[in-house]
Image (cartoon, rainbow, N blue to C red; front, side):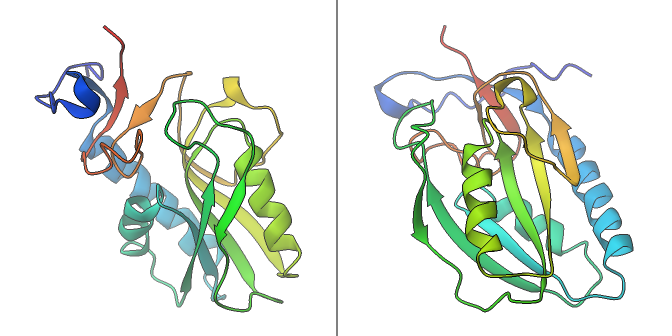
Length: 189
């Protein structure tokens, strides 16, 4: 399967013609989401976990994932910022929006779109641990281990990829491209 094909996504964003190239297609994403949900169903069959999704990037992944989870669960959101308008993390994580519910003595699953350097996820782990949950596990759609600066144990992982800048399926570049249904890379041609 040729994952690097170019779709007709020549959208003319940011004053330039940008051609996102499909890296992971819709079907591959769907299969990964179903696999991750099945693992969560198995591990939490007798529990009511709180899924904490990181906004904005994880909202599409979360929406698809919860439709395949056959458990009682709760959903919470946090909004963190570390990218601004560029392609590189500033490595200064800011908590824009914290939890609205109490997670003390609860089983928490962090839902992340992508774990890159690990700095943002580590920040979130520290924040959540201060709330004294019973347990915390991480479910990430994508991991880029070659970029890792902080060790992160990912319990449920969709895809491991090389160091490429991805957009689509919730991931953005300066708030653009989130709506694309596939995971795409942006190449500077």
